[in-house]
View: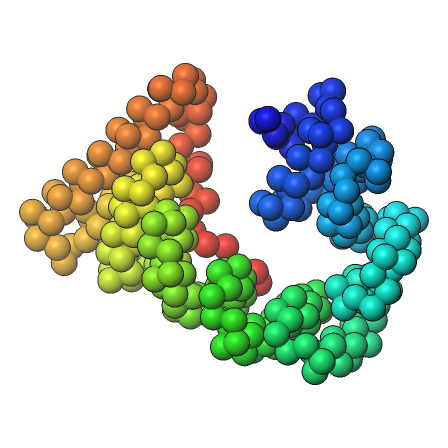
Length: 296
């Protein structure tokens, strides 16, 4: 059965479709708390999903925290605690609801430290500590904790991406680039990793970094020819390099040719999609969004 997308969920659904939709959001780590709560409240899934009920309850509980829905949080925690009275997973949810949500961050950190001593392999507990530091806007401290975390859990791609974004916030672009290099080594076929690395190099904005950006935008396009952001980046970097006075006329022409190819490919994609003239005229504005934004 084909699962309906999050945009289609309001169409008439069966219980099985609602269950599949919630599962899809869990697997894709999609954060859509209002939709999760609405689906949960629209369908009585308590007695029709078997043991999956507990995963759904945890999902709904997290959504309720995002929405500060105290009644729903209490309902979920009561059921989970009754079923798993000694579960560290349920205890973590309690800490999130009763301490983090009330911004009692120091108390929450103490509890997590105590839980980590009993279960040092629990990666989620380390991540909760880092999440608290980020919530407090203690970015340098969060970076240190994340770096220590990655020494223990080196294969956590989400953590590498999070560390990359933290470095970008601090405008430490070379360190952000290193994070993406690690991810590209582990998954060289992920076009989004190549794209993000290229964007960081584009932001650094030296001749050497611009050449790297062009190379990685090219690879992203090779892996996914319809990646529009990578195509925009390839156009911009090649255009920039085609005007470099230090280059030979041949090199400038080669880069101009690449820029022309990128623009023609962008135009073709829009034309094939029957996007219309108004979308073509928006290209220049969209190109301006390529530079990685840093938080001041």
